[in-house]
Image 1 (cartoon, rainbow, N blue to C red):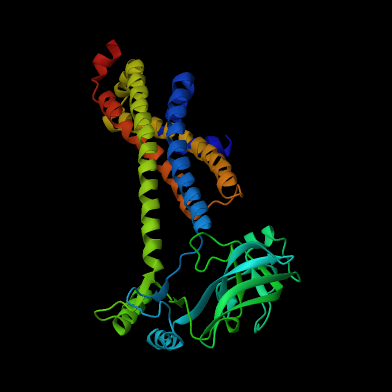
Image 2: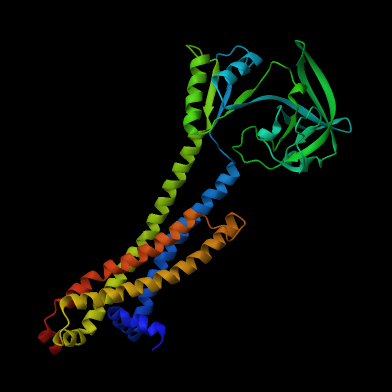
Length: 393
């Protein structure tokens, strides 16, 4: 006797269940297919929802626990001053702040305007951006960083030159200036929700802008709780009856997006679970038919000493075996389907996340449990059959 046969011999109920499943091949195969479909429906819908969420978050960009502070509707200047930035830095405590200046400029080619772009002024651009080509100088005082969309549009690469024309305020007077800059780096493509999205912008050292005009200050908090406390402190410091500064907590947006995706996923998985309920009804029907067909066989078992509990155990073992086979096959097929979804949405077929694998495992467990529950009534009905009546057929 080989090890597998010895293993089956250790569980006589499952050994008899395996023989019964093998004896009614067509009926068993149909039951397994129904379970398989249910497991694939739950796993693929759940894991596919996770892949969709990840792809959408990649598009939106990182939404961390940052606080954006900008001029409020009652701010007479319409911008934040250097004094405001100092106050925000003091109120924020140990949290890092990134003051940001902003203007608009025309891009000149051969002396003519080729288009317009946003200009950002920041002292430490590496706090906000990553370079796709070239490098961001650690202590930069000249040159320009280019967003990826503008780099493609104007064919700009590290070492290229770009001419920008803008109107700015110098010593209290509005002046027009045209400057030529050498490109230091092309920045990585940013998501739509990223702070100070650089895709359609040039980034310059803040010395290139008016000293006392800031469009916004970004406070980089450690977590959502700290961000909320900092936001409240800033509001209390600046705003009384008048709104001198506006404060936007990005962590709140991130929580709302996560909650929306979670509810959508639960709804879709619920639809998939309906297919497993149908599978459970099918299993119950299969087991009921098996109990009727094997009425005399069950009568013989009862006549030779099998108790009602033994009959229940055999019937439940058969239902569980169908569920295990269907769930295992369904799990393998689900992983293949999820790989196709990952390739389409994430560009990487084997980018299985923990959450996606949990949906696949959950579908398989649900498949086995549905099969087990569906076998309870047929098993109970077969066990209650009196041996004499069962032998009469």
